[in-house]
Image (cartoon, rainbow over all chains, first blue to last red; front, side):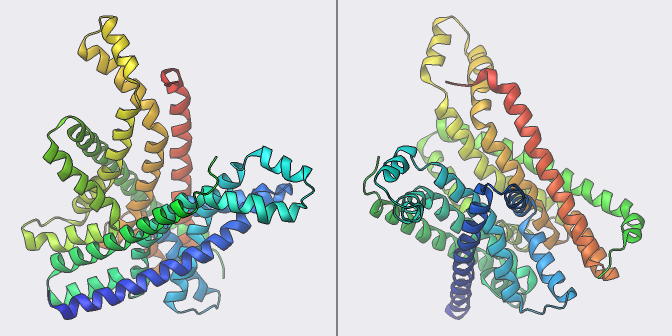
Length: 213
Length: 220
């Protein structure tokens, strides 16, 4: 493979990283909302959140992408395929992130909250200074895992015409008749990106290991 | 936007057929993945060192790259390496090899999770090697690996939708085709979402039943 082709793949890989990163950040934000809705004492709200999580975890991402890509124009909303891809990835990952965050918040030791109550911290202070930091630390490994899953799942947005790493490899394979080299190179790039993300996650976990119980 | 139930009824045989293909691809892929995963886990535990290293590479590569890329490599790259497969066999093979990498890790942890003391106790009680494997190791392992296996089964079920990209005529492919042909995306995608959601919930419920039935073998 010429350096030229590999350069194109690397460029496309950066786009894959960008799409995934945006989706993960949006997904965490939505996931927080869904997790709080699930924990809400408002039964209807909690039920809707449960159905949301069950739906987005139960339907394949490819189907979700097809729904968003085909249905939005049908109801008169025209978005570029990149936006549809980010919306699909964000919604899908938000359901998983919501479950991760819920697990994190449920694992915050009760004693800490009781002490905080005793010390007269307001519920908001408790959330910001105790529950959220601890829950975030407990959730971090799952978030890193989810980031890797989304990086891999982002290959599916090639189907709705987004030219990220997989689509670029596909286009180049079609024009050069060298599918083995191109798909192997694409696989290698995904693999390297995932290694880097896993490494960063391990580093962050070590940095955040203060005050381990 | 209106919902054409008549179209769905008219297309019901086609849709049910496609659902059958999805279920078949899922079950064959699942069985293949279990067999490969078990073989890899056993080979890594009891085989020579170099084999362990080689299989570690296999597991890492197949877990670290997207299924779609693996599928493309096999289906489009295969013919250049003397391996020409039709879409369905290629899809089943890719599913098995991909799932096998994940299952091998599940089984590996299962092997490690059975307490040595249980095996030693069985040896002291005079059980033969075969009896130990059949009555102690495998049942206890089954309990340990069940939750993760059910999860993986659900992942593989959803992954079968990717086979539509290489034109395997399963549920996603058929429903999308109906959607495009009749400009009936709402109906088609309704069928899709409902079909997969139902199958996933069914698999999860089956897993819960199995967990209850196997609870008596639980290690604790």
